[in-house]
Amino acid sequence: MKSLRFVSAEALVSNPQVARKSLRNVAHNLYPLLFKASYLLDQGEVIHDLLENWPLTEFNLGSLLGQTADHPGDIRSRACRTCLEACLRGLRDYVLNDSSVYSKRLRVVDLTGIKDVEVQLCKCKKSLGRWGRTRLLATLCLELLGEVQKQQPGSSGSGVGIDVLVNLFVTDGNYEAVAQALKMRRASPLKLRCVTFRADSLDRAKLFSVLRLAEPESLQKLEVVHNVRLQMEHLEGLLSHVGFSQLVSLTLPARTFDVHRLTAEEELVLASIGEKLSQMTHLTELSLAFSTLTGKLRKLLSPLRTPLRALELANCSLSYADMAFLANGLHSFHLEVLDLSGHSVVALYPSTFFKLLNQASQTLRVLSLEECSIEDSHVNRMIMGLIPCRKLQEFKFLGNPLTSRALKCLFRAFTELPKLKSIEFPVPKDCYPDGTSYPLDDSSLPNFDHQKYEEIARELQAILLQANRDDIKASTPLYGSYDPDIHETSNELGSFLLQSLKNALESFSTALQKME
Ligand SMILES: [Zn+2]
Image (cartoon, rainbow, N blue to C red; front, side, top):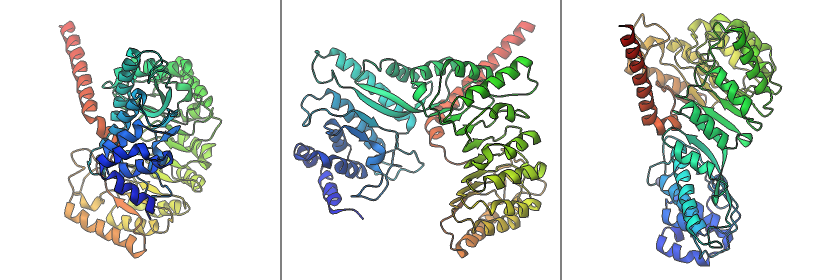
């Protein structure tokens, strides 16, 4: 329940003119309360003024918007554009403002607590995602630097030094601003401190250069994803020159590794990468999806001295030897997140796979087995494997050729998993025309009997309801779950892909011309 204080705060900020005038008379310990109330009501002007006059040493967005004594609601998943822009512009004006009510004590601004989700529940319904926040913040840092350099020594902006903790998301579209803002950090009143870093649609040289500027030694999470051409030897070069000693989580782009027919030299490169990974003593999350790792998992992961808690190996062409390494290795007893999508683990390596599942059963929270050729004949074994996973919260198994009958058996078993919250299940095989082959291609994927699917989905839902498990959300996101980062940069992602295609076609036609 909201406290009376919170209700009063809401009443005050719902009239922005009055609220902005009253700020001068408000005790500094009420600022957090007024901030959350303003954020909840999309009151951008009040938010701006609160930030401009922020009287405390710290501004931590995550704790301000999370559960508080006065308001139990957690609104960290509101990446409201109005509110976030107002925060950042307010922060700029904090530095520039000479007539602030309170003396300037702010030292740390932590913007990392915001969560990006699909639906914005705020009034403006518009979000400012991680990429947009990165661009705006970098631009403001540069603007501010220009302003401060124009000022006389001793005036408002000079002498202010605020660490701004951020999750950076850099693409070619915001690279220049981010690189400049990081380069000028020493002189700037707002000092960007990168906690996590995501790179997408970025030239490799730019990636390496911006990473070096982003204080990689204190980086906790690095995600290098789409449209970055990073291969094994480049990765080895990067890890040799840049230390990521605090890194907890690493995601590498598709095709970083391709271990088909490795030369002796490439074998050494692979071993060296394993060695470099082992020096990251905090590393517990590794995502290598869409790399070809056949038979080399041991070489890459056995040097690690700390167990992994999250391991994503979707579509890595794993062999029996790789599965055996996983089932017998250090990591299996600690895995909380495991993605083996794109491997026929149940059909090809049942004993090693179920051994792995059993060992991870005490810790596993998220399991993805999409397009794993799991058929009706595997269902009993699957159920026996899943039942001991008492901590399982999410299970994704889209794209498997399972009939509605098998799905019903699975759903009955799901009701016995006490922590389960989310299931992504495939369109039943019996909804597709006879003879449809798996894995489904893009053209056959949507080509199913939708009415029949709806009926079966209702029956599956009824199984959950009968067992009082309406807390489990079951869905079939045909084209994958919502990804806020991809959603935000999809235009750039698309044009980057088109450009790459155009370049490839051009070099192809040049090559043809040369042959003529
Ligand atoms: Zn809004």
